[in-house]
Structure formats: C-alpha cells, structure tokens
Length: 186
Image 1: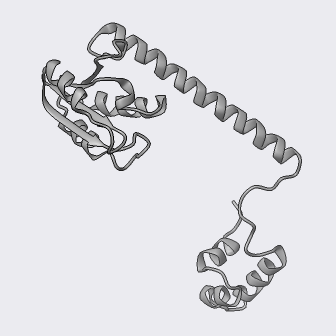
Image 2 (image 1 turned 180 degrees about the vertical axis):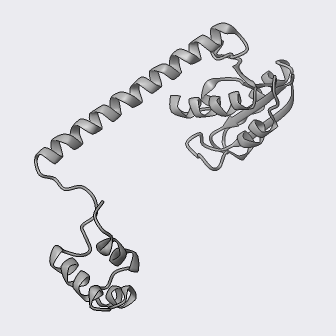
Image 3 (image 1 turned 45 degrees about the vertical axis):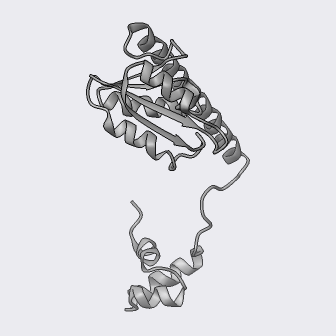
C-alpha cells in the first residue's frame, strides 16, 4: 500500500514545487507532475501514468481537488478508474475527499448520486423537448436519400433483373441503401 502523488499546474508561468513538497511530506514515494490545463482530456499524460501505477490498496494523493479534476463529472470518471484499480484517493487540503475513510466514501457516494440525478433530469428535459418537437411535426434524422417513387421504381427494376450495384450507381447511392429498399418491412 503506497501513496502515489500527483501534482499539476495549468501554465508554464506556474510552479508545482509547493505541491511536490506537500506530497513528499504526506509520504508519497512515487510522484507524477505536469504542466497542463485540467480541461485537456488527452494531454494529461502524467495523470494517466499515476493512475496506471495504482495497485490495490494504494492511494492517489493530490494537494487539492482542483489539481485533479475540473468538474464533478471529470472527478467521478477518475474515481471510477481509481476504484477499478482497487485504490483510494486523498486530497490533502480538501479533507472531505478521502476514500480511505468511511466519511470520505459517504461524501463521494452522495456526490455521485447527485450527479446521476442531474443527468436524469437533463435527459428528461431533452426527452420532453423532443416529444414537443415531434408533436409540432418536426421530423428528426437524416433526409431520405430516395423518395417513395424512386423506391417503387427500384423494386420493379430489381424484379426485372437489374443488379443492386447497377441500381446504386444509377440512383447515386450505396448498395446498402438499395438493399434496405428491397428488404421486406418487418
């Protein structure tokens, strides 16, 4: 069971030596640090290395939550990854963020539940908006490549011996489109 430290600053003008000192004082033997914005989702290579280094029972230690995650959604995604590794997380200056304690687990469980509740409310509002738009006659999705008349002509021509490839070239569409036109309705 090891403490693995992660330090981050957003720009080149900033210095993470203060974070490194605090992480060492907290017993972190392995440290990962980087200068990158938190909003960069694919540029946080040191964070990924720190997560990859976690073994069951280890704790990822950060000085403050804002050094790790930019939003609750970002935090919850990282927590899932940490939990999947069988590890914990601890923020030195945010004592509520400590999954090594029952209290920290409780707080994060509540936060996770609130985030899930928010996602469901957003989904419900989106569904209501879609239903209202459909009631007004809004048609969703891509415009059909072929109209009904063209579909009837394709069916007749195919029955008369034209190949799907030939019909696709003539109607400037893919063979899969012709196949769907000819497929019996289920």
